[in-house]
Length: 145
Image 1 (tube, helix red, strand yellow):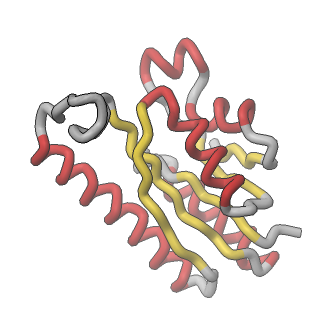
Image 2 (cartoon, rainbow, N blue to C red; image 1 turned 135 degrees about the horizontal axis):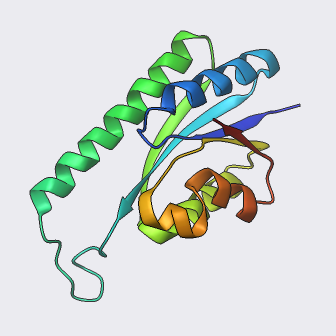
């Protein structure tokens, strides 16, 4: 049924539950899993629009944490016998759900597995990331509580 699954991890407490669901589905169906973390940024890169980041060191540290999250998840999946790989991509904070949907589409995903991330005021107004992915994506979405 599933050949390609995209797992969107936020780094929040629900990431282990999201990964466990994806691992179970991939093990059962033999699907390949792409672990995805969309790093939300609040400003554009210095080379675009002439803007400069306010704290380049902080940005590098956040990138390292994001890559560690993805690498750890990919390692767990491979350890469970799942064909897995991962990516970290960046998007403006308001575009995270759109980016998850676009990456899944470009990966020919049959399913997106995402948690019910809470995101403060923006989530209160627009819904959490998982809910927004489910509304935007033509690909089936499994929301993990």
